[in-house]
Length: 55
Image 1 (cartoon, helix red, strand yellow):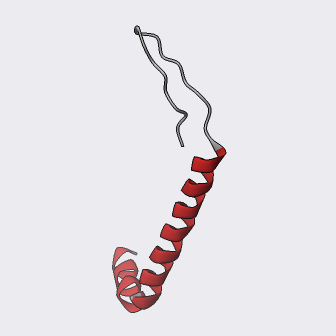
Image 2: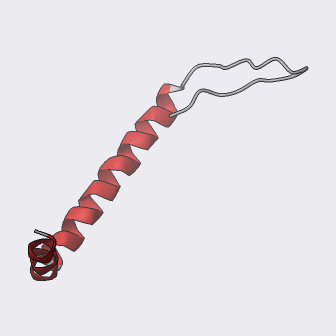
């Protein structure tokens, strides 16, 4: 999450981080985490073998 940037004349000005974009970012983060969890659940045996090989 980055603030909006309003720069001109070589001077950098940063605005605020909007609550709307923060909410959308949290939604995307949760959606991605659920997707990763679903993939791991479907391929649990493959990941277990790979983790045992690393250990």
